[in-house]
Length: 448
Image 1 (cartoon, rainbow, N blue to C red):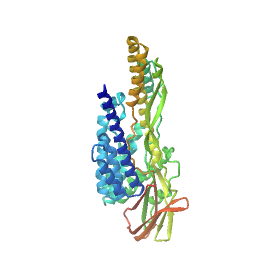
Image 2: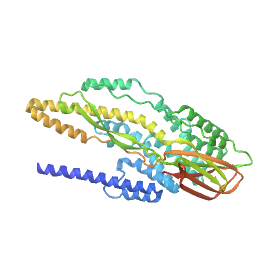
Image 3: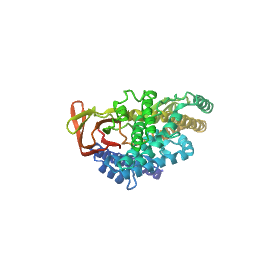
Image 4: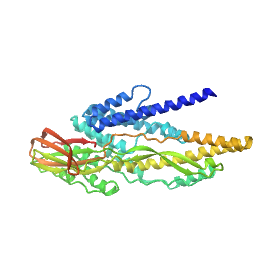
C-alpha cells in the first residue's frame, strides 16, 4: 500500500513538472515574439524540443511545424518556412487517414489521446503563407501551386464549402436515442452552424499572382471571388471590400503598382474551460459532472491604423481585407460542436458505468463502501479528462492591404503602425524597386 502511495506522488509530481516546464517554455517563446525577435523564438522552440519534457508532444507535430514555419516566415527565412509548412500540411493529410481509429479512442479517453489533426483555418493559411514564401523566393509559379491548392475545383476552399454546406439533421437525434437507450439520458447539446467557405485573402493573393504570370482570365476569376467572399460570408467580412482590390485590378498601362500587405496582431488560442452538467444517476455523488472543453481566448491587437509613406510625400492608409481571428472563431465552431458532443457522450457513458459498479458495491458491501467507491470513481473520471488546446499559436489576427500606382523606379517606403494617435512602430524599406508588368509586393508584419 505505501508503495502505491509513493508511486501516485511521483506520477503527480511528474505531470506537475512537465506542465510547469511547458508553461515556462511557451512564455519564453511568446516573449520573443512580443519583441519581434522571431529568430530567438525559433531557437526557444528548438530548445524546448530537447529533453524529456517537450513543448510540443509527439502527437502535436502539426502545431510544431506550423509555429516554426510561421515564425521563420516572419524572420524572412522563406526556404525553411516552406519546408516546415509543407511538413505540417503533409501531416494534416496523414491525420485524416488515422482519424477513424483515433476518433473511436477519443470517445473512450479524450481528444488528447489522438494525433492533433489541425484546424480547417490552419490548413488554408498554410498555403497562403507558403505562397508568400515562394513569391519572396522569386518563384511566381511556386506561389501559384500553393494558391491552386486552395482555389482550383475540389481544392481546399471548395471542399470547405461542401463540408459546411450540409449537416445531417438526424445525427443528433440518433445519438440522443442511443444515449437514452444505454444510459437513460438524452438531450445532447445542439450543434452550431458554420458560415465560412471562402477566403478573400487567399483569393486576392491568387489574383495578384495570376496577374503577374500573365493569366488575366484566372486573375479576373480570383478578383471576382474576393467580392463573392464578402457577399457570402458576411459574418466574417463585416466591412467593405477594400478599394485597393479594384485598384490592383485596374492599373494604368503607363504605371507600375506597388502592392502592400500587412499582418497584425495574433489570432485566438485555445484555453481549457471547465463545464458542469447535471446527470440523472441514482448516487448523489454522480449527479454532477465536471468536464473540460477548449475555449478560444482572443488576443486583440493594439494597432488601430497603418499608414504608408512613399518617398516622403505619398501617404495612404492600409485597409482591412481579412479578419483572420474571425475566421479562426467561425471555423472552430464546426469542430467545437463535435468536441462538445464527444465530451458529453464520453461523460455520460463513463458515469453510467461507474453507477453500475457503485450499485453492485452497495449490494455486496453496503452504503459506506458504495460512497467511498463513488468518491474514488468521480475523482478518477475527472482526472481522466483534459481539454485539447493544441493549435498554432502564431497566426496573425488581421490582414491589411493597400497600394499605389507609380512610375517605374526605386522608392523608399515607411510603414507606420498606430495605436490611436501614437506611432508604436515604424519600419523603413529602402531601395524598393517598382517594375512594370510584374508583381511588386511588399509584406510587413507587426504582431502587437
